[in-house]
Image 1: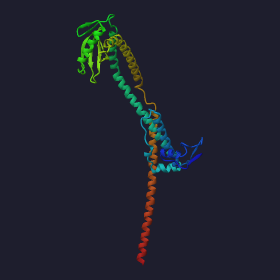
Image 2: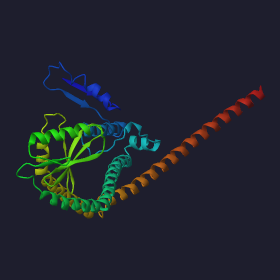
Image 3: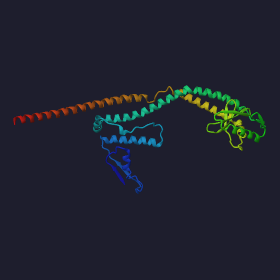
Image 4: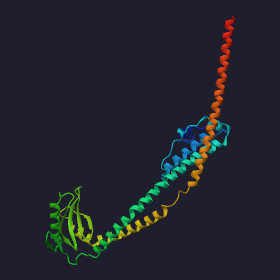
Length: 327
C-alpha cells in the first residue's frame, strides 16, 4: 500500500492527517510506503524546512529534553519579495539566510543558558562562603552534643520531678502535652534527659513536637495518645540525633565546598560559541542588506512599469480627446 504527496503541507498536523489515511488501525498491510515529491528551486524546500524544524521541536518536547527552554512557531515567519524571488530562482543566499537564522536561534538559546549559569556561579561565590561558615559552626556544636549519652539507668526529670519508671515518666509527659496543646508556635521547657533540656512545641498545624535542646535543637513528633511511648522517642532522639546531624552537616559542607570550587572555576569562562555567534550575526546583516537592495531594485522596476502604464493611458486619453475634437 502506498500514498503519494504531490505537494508539501504547510502545517505538520495536515501532513499527519494525510498519512493517517494509510497509517491507521485496521490496515492489513504489513508495510506501507509514503512518497513526498519536491520540486527543485521552489517553495517546496522551504515548506519542508518548516515541517522538519517543527518535528524537531515537538520531538524534544515529547521526549522531555529540558535543554530546550522555548520554541517558536515558524508559521509566523514572513518572507519578503526578494527572498521569494531568490527561493524560486534557486539563489543559494536564501538557503544560507534560512539556515543562518535557525542556527542563530540555537546559539542565542545556548548563550542565554550560559549567561544564566554564569549569574548562578556569581551568586554561589557570593553566598556559599557564609553558608559554609554557618554549617561549620553548627557542626562544632553538633559534635559537642554527640558526646552526650542517655543514662544507663533510666532517669528523666519532668517539671522538676525525677522519674525512674518509664510508665510514670510517660504519664507526666502526656499531661504536659495536653496542657500545651493549644500553645501554638512557642516552646516550653518541661524537663531534662541525658544532658539535654526537654521542650514541647505545638506547631501551627496542631502537630506537637518533642524537642531536645543542647547546643542545637533536635525534633521528633510527639505521640498524642495516653498510650504513646514518648519517653522512648526522647531516648532514641538523645541516642542518635546529634550523630546523624553531624554526618548531615559534614556532607552539606562537602557539597557546598564542591559547588564553590566549580563556581570559581567556571565563572571566568567565555561562551564557547562566541566567535561563531559574532560571525553569524555579521553574515546575516550582510544578507539582510543584500535582500534589502534587491527589494529596492524590484520596487524601482515596478515603479517604472507603473509609470509606463500611466504614460500609455495618458497617450490613449489624449488621442481619444483629439479624435473627439476632429469629429
